[in-house]
Amino acid sequence: MDRFDLVVVGAGPAGCAAAVAAARAGARVLVLDRARFPRPKTCGDAISNRAAEIVADLVRDTEPLRGVPHARVDTGVAIFPGGASIVRDFGAHPGFIVPRLGLDDHLRRAMQAQGPELREGVAVRGLVEEHGRIVGVQTEAAVIRAGAIIAADGPGSVGWTALGVPYHRDRRLAVALTASMQDVRPGPHRAANEHYFEPGLRAGYGWIFPPVEGLANVGVYQRADRFHAHGRSLRQLFDAFVTAHPERFDGARVVGKTRVWALPLATLPGLPGMPGLLLAGDAGRYVDPLAGEGIWQALHSGRLAGQAAAAALAGAGLGRAAVDAYRRRCALDIGLPSVARMGVQDAMDVILATGLHRQAWVRAVLGRGYGSERLEASKRLR
Image 1 (cartoon, helix red, strand yellow):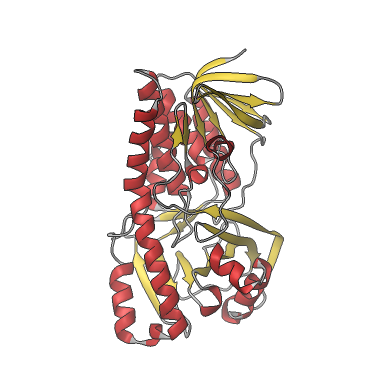
Image 2 (image 1 turned 60 degrees about the horizontal axis):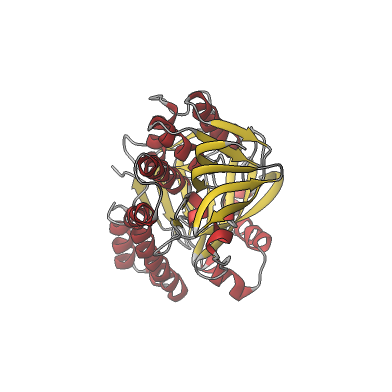
């Protein structure tokens, strides 16, 4: 029977960040992933500047995306019906668009170089609990015991089963569809992540991101309560978005398949875990509700989980006090800003439904908020 200090379930950004943080603190770490790398992942591919800083730390390189196909993002643009827009400038701290096929494999290689063992093609079927504490994982072949487990395996995590929590399909969840498109026409803003806020995508948006190797990541995002209310499919929403913007999509075509995915939104108090178990990334329900962003949240919560687990294992173990301390930190860094940003999302819903976005004073207020870091956790502005 294998024995490790820490087992991490999932080798995406959250899992890699957790494994590296714990290994640097001296823990013996095993990472399990059901996929084999490199593998693609459905995602918007946006890495904020603060996410890029964490990647730089994890890969130990001042050029964190060296050798990985990417596009630079210098600005973010919110675009309203009629074409009015609000621009935010990232100044000397650009973000990036990085397809997950490259990003996750980049992080995986950096993780393995720093000590954690990775076993690919291994599906975790459940967690092993003894006397109210998680003590191991059950794979198809064996039970692997450890002093602590970090579940970083996304929506529907094995950690959710252990905690007995449901798969919510209300305002605590969002859904998205993404496509790679060729020959998307350039917009007026170069190196910009463009988000289109439109009445047909209430509590959501359509997006166009800068192309990487000739392919632009394009998609639609909507909070689940609004999505289920109208009964249209994500593909119908996507087709309507493309049709509504011939200035960008005339002559463009989808390359490969469109893909859909679910995003568990950050709320309070979140899903930190239980004795012996911490949840990170999408498994912890840490996706930003306003932007649908999850990579910084995954990297940040994963690193916090790895540090918390290693520190606890060096002392009394990963008990309730250590889990609660991790919960409080994630609530402060991710949960509280996200709750506030869901309020902004609800306000935007009203503004678009009533046509208030046409008023100059409303756009001025939105511009001041959009250009401020007060409710922004993952990005640094000029």
